[in-house]
Length: 373
Image (cartoon, rainbow, N blue to C red; front, side, top):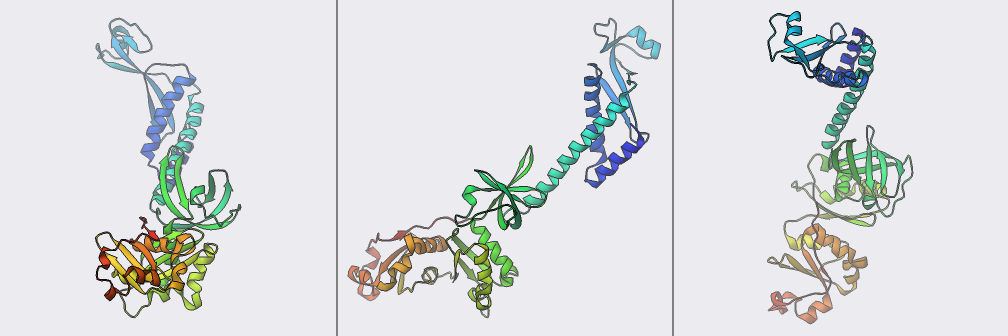
């Protein structure tokens, strides 16, 4: 194996970010295996690899014994002392056994080892890069799909978009450019495996960070997100600066900012509401676009009873209960919606007429909150 090959290996190792010591150790181990396999040898051997000269020498290691039972592993004291009179029983003698054409085998082995190590190093680099991008958004290109996944190219690696993470209102074709949310990065024997999503609430959050400078610089904060992907979402925003309108910042001039996000999500409706630490105000805002007359809070059960005008009852509940369900997810409070006439019949509205309003148990349209990551 020539010094030019060794130089090339060293340069390649540096280029790929692998230490030359790692390459040499791996190469020595591989050469021992190659020697035993190619030359039908089973004895203990040591490889002497000179990076400067590009030379490879093989030494058989034999133990000095009085009586030899296996000549491949042992040498008699008499034979050992012919090599060096200082040898004694139990010493290890090294005898060079380098085959004539071992240089060719060494060169082939070196190529295989370096290729393997480079592949491992590149996988490590990709894993390190993408593990830092968990819970982040990236633009990918659809490559192909099967019954379980859509395969999305993220440049150096192909990510997996499971069926459960695909939006029901979207169809994906090869070469489509889509934004995806990285949910999980795993290290496997075949390299890093990256899972992405189009339905995760985090995707909506990251899209707003991209489109709204006030969110990106921290002036406006996203407090919570509730999403039913492909259909409707709600997002609550807040700003400590009283001069900044957080809802207006997210909507943008003539609705341009939120419309960009709606287009990216193929028409998914997005309600942007003002966050408040007061649950009465927050729940009322979360039920937008419905008008709310009153919100009664039960702190112990973290539940609210909301009174809305009769003509707004269906709007407050939403199609298949969606509006109320999303509001419950967004706020973290149970929401029980009552029409104004029903609330009056039960004696809970107006409040001054409900001396025992806190003791009334309401069950109609009870929407439980669900935990949102």
